[in-house]
Structures are given as structure tokens and as C-alpha cells.
Figure 1 (cartoon, protein in one colour):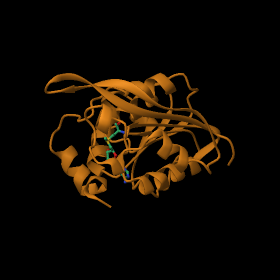
Figure 2 (cartoon, rainbow, N blue to C red):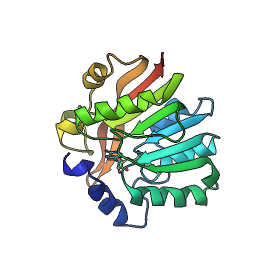
Figure 3 (cartoon, protein in one colour):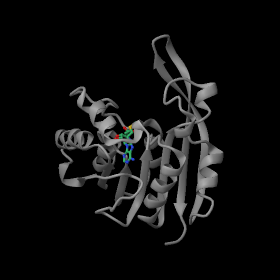
Figure 4 (cartoon, rainbow, N blue to C red):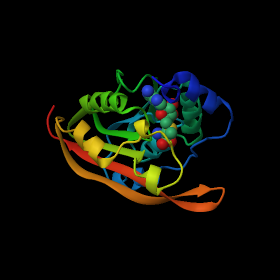
Length: 209
Ligand SMILES: C[S@@+](CC[C@H](N)C(=O)[O-])C[C@H]1O[C@@H](n2cnc3c(N)ncnc32)[C@H](O)[C@@H]1O
């Protein structure tokens, strides 16, 4: 495991400020692709401070935020209490590559910006898929490999950047029907103003247990 996948790295990052590093606003792609789903049980894998978890809890979902950083999860529980949804959420401090869920099996598994080496990401996705019900939905969003050459921001290490091809190959044997797997254009704020960014999105339905 390299540094960016360690608990210490993430705890130090989250402990450096009382502010929310990733804001309290749901990710635009999570909102666009998942807002219309019928509420049930969901896992927010690598959910961090919980901007997406709280969004789902407010929509009526029962939410389990699984993250390697206990500091992030403490911030998440505070955010959930401030938003009045503490009764709808669980925090589970665990490694995404092999976790035991308290809400399993779930109707929806979301993974947002889990930028880890591809073999670890494959383990995380397989574990997440195992915990989704037949007919349930898997949704993922990442800084794309394309961002290295055509975009700005995000990790600069190609080993932690998935692409359409990498995800397609990773999921080839999984019981999934892929509905969306594409690179979307976005923008990031840099010191030189707004610049283009490339975001990979995945939406799939689980077809068997
Ligand atoms: C860029 S943040 C994104 C957080 C959140 N998904 C969001 O969009 O706001 C990446 C998150 O992945 C978590 N993480 C990194 N490696 C992990 C691992 N192996 N298992 C579980 N969580 C991990 C970090 O603690 C961090 O909260």
C-alpha cells in the first residue's frame, strides 16, 4: 500500500482543519445519477466526511458510510447531527478492500473518488458488489486517467486513476449490467482560474446474487 491509501495519511489530512475538506454539498454526479432512486439501504464506500451520505439520508435512505479514516467519520457524524439525520446513518471504520457491512445487503452502493491502486480498487468494488442486492445499483465516480493528459487537478499518479477500459476489464466477470461508463467533462478551480477536468462515472445494475 502506498501512502495515499493509509489511515495515517487520511487522518492527518482530515485532522488538519475543523472545516470540511470536501464541503457539505453532494457531488454533482452522485446527485444527477442517484437522486431519483427509490430510497432503501445504501453503502457510501470511502464516504469521508459524508457530503454524499447525508444527501442520501435526507432523501430517506438508511446509510452506512465506510471509510478508513476515523477522523473523517467523526466529522461525518457531526455533519449528520447538524443536518438532523443522525438516526439514519452508521459510521463503519474499515478498509474498502475487505469490509463487513452492518446494513448488508443494500439497494445501492456508491463509491466516490476512491483513488487507490487498481488491484486494491478491484478488491473494493468486488466487496461492494457482494454487499448489493440483486436488482440493486452500483454507482462510482473518480478522477479519470484521461485527466492526466486532458484535465487539471486530482491525483497525478496514473496507478490510482481508473479509465473506461480499466473499469470495464475489472468488472468483466461481475454479475452487473453496465448502464453508464463514460468520461464526463467538468471544471476545477485552480490558482489560474477554472480549468477543465475529466471525471469517470459508472452506473450498473446487479443482475444476480
Ligand atoms: C477524496 S476522499 C472522497 C471522500 C468522499 N467520497 C467524497 O466524495 O467526499 C477519499 C476517501 O477515501 C478514503 N479512503 C482511502 N483509502 C481507503 C481505503 N483503502 N479504504 C477505505 N477508505 C479509504 C479516505 O479516507 C477519504 O475519505
